[in-house]
Length: 468
Image 1 (cartoon, rainbow, N blue to C red):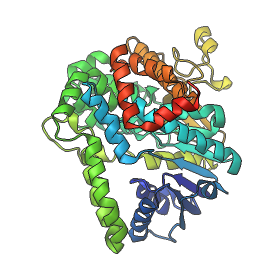
Image 2: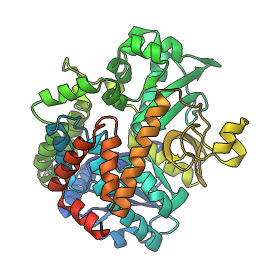
Image 3: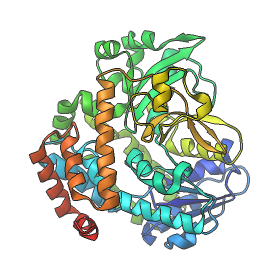
Image 4: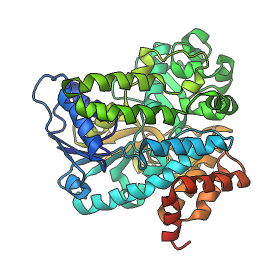
């Protein structure tokens, strides 16, 4: 199987290579193709791969190119992890919002809308070229904001596009460990999770035929043993009756997060930008030491994740850093799609249920929705059974209010953003900013959009290209 990584100069590519070269996924791919628009980044990542310690068996052949049509030719599977504008773009996503007094985060709120507006057009072009050069290939999308990007690609690729994120799966693993629950490998039948990408809740965790989540939520000591349990006060979680995805910190404790970010000497994006500007040339020239340098940088980067939520300056522990990794989620999906056996994963896919799994209630059946209360044709994040035919959502409970109201509102924001990016509709972009609950202001939305247009002149070209 030929696997293409679009965004092959990305910092996390060595994680994918390492997972393919050893362990349960060894032999899954016969060739790895790396595509990136930046030849210098490709050279740096290739240096890291060449310097990695040899795994048992033959090394995986790697080829790199800056030509996307060449990269796509003959591809059986495409992983997409692109970042238009690079880390400098992320700096602007965060800084424009923060300078206007709102949350400055890469995928949540204003920054996430900006990121999507400039990313979706590139991903649509990738999908069009896939239809031309490898029409039977699957696209597994890591590109953020993963839910919005995946929804934008559905009209072109249908069921052959699946969005992934390791955040929800990591939450399930950490919660199960804290609760002493045994989850069978590759099965999520005992797990209840619903939401959108970076906006979801674990609401059920069964072990031995009993839901152990209420006991976990009532145990302050157990909650303190993992990242999500530490992000929120125990009484709040007990009242909520669910464990929020870590990104809900920005909604439930938004003002605290905003002030913590403003107090930092630099934004998360600025820190990563400086690190990578210095690191990549060193990697390309490091020879046999490239992997060691990369591994040190990876650890430092992981420890700084969600630092604004750790006011005491504490570090994430080893269990938090070992939540599964998006590379293993992607490769587990790839393995099942290639016919190696069904698995169950939390994925971003269309909310419609296969007919044979339709619930009995008339209301749910009428909506054909795996997460009742959300549109059946919307991309959501939930447990899925993955087979060679694609990702098949598993039925979930209807979220209670106010969770359902928040999900509906953010889904409306996502759909407005997709329309703006796909059709060059500036009015839709303005409406998306104004509707987002972390902005919630028409005047502020206008300032945000104008700020992003100054930072990214390509947005002006997008609107003009659509004749608006």
